[in-house]
Length: 473
Image (cartoon, rainbow, N blue to C red; front, side):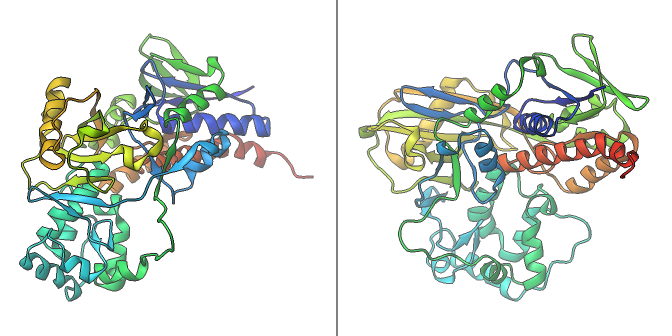
């Protein structure tokens, strides 16, 4: 009799799980029935691409880190590796004190590793630069358990470096508040480097030396030239229609003997031998009948964000800037948190003679801005852009994308909460995996890695005991 595996959630983590499970089934002739359940009417989660008049506009993520190989490997397996492109490398800026400043050369994730560019940067006052120099003499951080990213970096480099360089970069990755974000769950390598070298600046310089290459620099990001949604579309093509159930939500999961009963919002029930859960953390307590081990996830916040993609003719930009975009320090009267000059970062995304800008709004302390109308958000964005780029014309078109409570916050003790959940599932609900951007990394490669691992764990759970039971003659 076939084993039934149910995957709950059709974002990139769930899709990856379904795809690789299907490949293992076909490759090894495994007796598995696969069921992917997605509560909405479409697959892909935050991955959405609009293809319009020669523009390729991402409503959610626009790329993935090239050094993390799992996304490219998935593209290869799907036969779309020829559509993978690198971003154009170019100067990045920080908007601080209502002025654009070039990112100091040698900055690595916001940590300065070259003295001269740091000293001559207008991002910091003389006092701020002297304070950052204390990193060379301060002792190692002593911490039991976890601490916030903000506390760690403020101690080592001071408030100015944190607020004008590190915070705009690192908080942008998670759309969060670095004074609430877990150091150990987000960037534990910084703590490890400091523990090894004492100085975080010298440690970063030794551990991650800047590469001097001849010729043009290669970008560090990759994407799909036809849009990231191509990955979603290709995976859906690989799955049989009966393996995908859309528009139905999972209400809860019950253990019945050695199997699991999945209750759906249409009152149907599905029996399963193994489950891969990939939904956001806020749904987890209800799915598991509010067992105490899942209660802490009710208090974990999620940030709401929006992005506004705006198209112009080239001549509309009176003050062109040589670069690919900027992030915004909190020490400004700006509502946007970042702006990507998409037409310069991604050559494929914009027709010749056009300009495409993608601006982001929404901070943990300003979630309400996301609820404004499209017209209000566009005007807010244009008002900020006029200060930096002298844009006077109206856009040819715009696309507003809202993501309500979509960015999980890895707050202090995140790893402890997640570990407790893991241990409970292993003991009380073997064969059930809970993964996704709420737990083990939010980038596309991180989610793909989690899907691959969950498939491996599921196959091991379902078939390892049967292999052990067969005598080896």
